[in-house]
Image 1 (tube, rainbow, N blue to C red):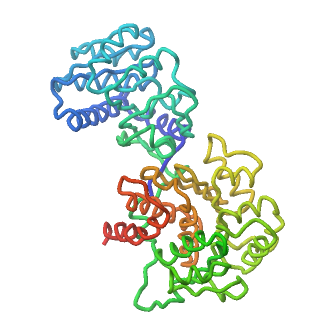
Image 2 (cartoon, one colour):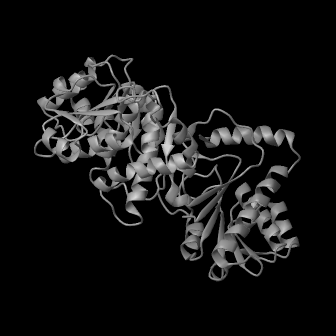
Image 3 (tube, rainbow, N blue to C red):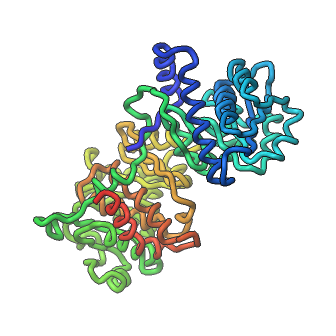
Length: 479
């Protein structure tokens, strides 16, 4: 898994590294790595390095120093470098001197527009991980003029480093070059960071604050049948979803479970005939009481929030098996929390709210700090909480948090959440750790969305049918 650390943890690690390395060594490592990334970016976007024009937007902190030193390294490769100093009297002295010795130019902000207009690449060295809030007016004015691609130093200025929130003018980068370790902003604000490149500067860090699954994690843990397996040992998942009037949720949730991994899928609900017609391999019955034994349930999409829906949810929660409660099930829990009395507190529960459902569950909106919001809900309900959004946050009651950074925004389509609930249910039935199951489901869900879309709008039905290809592509990279 990729580790992600908060800015407080990063600063602590930097402090330990500063104590045992020569003065200025960490900045030189960072700035040299930045210069390599900038040269690579220039090559990709302009076809060369020498003779290209780079403009540095330089603030008063160490990020400005990193940009200035990187500019000095680029001068040695024949790049024309101009530093626009937002606060000349507070610019990093040694970095500025190095740039000037190398033949670089430094100008005040008032002269910035003419140089920005000529730039092939602009470097955002305005603020670092200690910065909070939007860009100040002068910096915002200069950023507004930029038409060339921007490479951000450590993080895009104006984007909160720990939450990824943006509440005013900010830099939208094509690439972000960060140092030492990934920070929350890199996972939580992908549309602002662009491509993220990590430069190792020798920081020692353990026990990440957040984690992000990579393809190796998902491939290694995804359940596949072995020579001794049968349809029961692979996991039997129950799907309680949909209605006679709205059978689509049932078809999507059950279909995604079939496509994912389940040895057997049992459907229970009023859409039994429609589900059976779409997926003949599913055992479909009219009620949850008639469904038979399962190893996990996915419940909620389209069941309604009235008395019948409550009865279905209460029954499922009382079976003593892991449950993924989605859509209408989360609304029922918010309105009638006594349904949770049917649950053994030691039985795994996964809740999958979007922002509106979260607000019903918690009495307040998630707000800009979605990681803290998910952690608080997980603790309150003693459940894994998969907080949906452009970036999905998965929090366990023990404090573990995973984030899933999407591949585009193709999943913003009706029925997409029903597909996700079927995936989670299938993985729970395979006896995976609920937190890992939810994170893996989110990973494959987003990959299937990208495969189904192929850079054009797709539907939830297309998403279901892309699940095998998503799993196949993951497994092919590790086989």
